[in-house]
Length: 421
Image 1 (cartoon, rainbow, N blue to C red):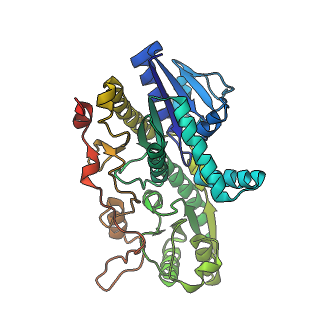
Image 2 (cartoon, rainbow, N blue to C red):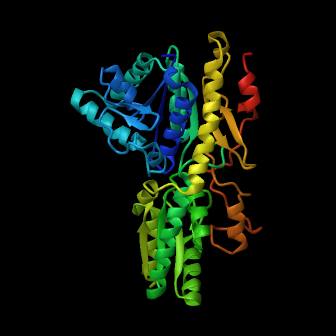
């Protein structure tokens, strides 16, 4: 066997992950045939930790027409897998990771930090023992940063190609991430259904959307769904202005629609008494006699099926990521040392797929920018997005600075493929 390649899904699940898994596996099979083995790693990087302990049950094998062995009986046909919702490999999010480490700390009677160090050591050990030539990782900015740390600690890490995945669409360096388009579509359908209900009862429906740090998903779904108010973390807002807007909309058309990102904050003094901004807003509007209901479909957005656009994006990013991996594998050992060992493939505003050296790409979060096309549409249509200053401009939350990509991190495909030669 000449090459050992693998893929894993890291962070939250979303539509399009199975497409990435199967497309990279298919390209490996078509390109290398029996000269390569392609593995799917279950539950993210935990597969490395389990491998270090001698447990191989977290590895499945991809053949020419689906999954082979190790108890994976979700689907056997490649075409069904690539369009299935969520991820057949499973994943490990930050929240599930914390629960796992807490349980480990209790079992071994050690501190949480000690459990984390032990786990990291196992992951690094397992990555070395698995002896991979290349690894495809779908993940968001947190996952990419984590693999930066792992590659630095591993004596000879595999070539890692990241594929931008996040329904929040907040990965730096890319304007389109796997999972975002399908989540927007699912969110919009939920908004439409609730509008019919709201009109029947002259109510305001407040939709709680994903977006712990950013408002891309809530902004785009809100605009497509015809929301009257869209609250995102990037801009300051005032409950009195919201109440006035809702009252006007209910009086005018009989109902109102609002989308609130889960990470939205406010300077309103009593908001900290509530679990989230959604609960706070609903409470205050009911106090004002506005019949208001909240709707939370966040986790349904993660498990929705990929749209055609999502499958096309996932396929495109997978193809580009495989080209990067193929160029690396074709190089000599000396030439491989000249390659950046951790890159990410993403898609920019001009529609071009771009390769980034993650060690040069500045860490951070891609927030909604002041010149975002959907934000400008919202302001033109007089959708309430936040409080304005004396000049009529939205007041930006200081905790959400606009992100600037480090130009040195951008690697053109031609430059990458010729690197070291």
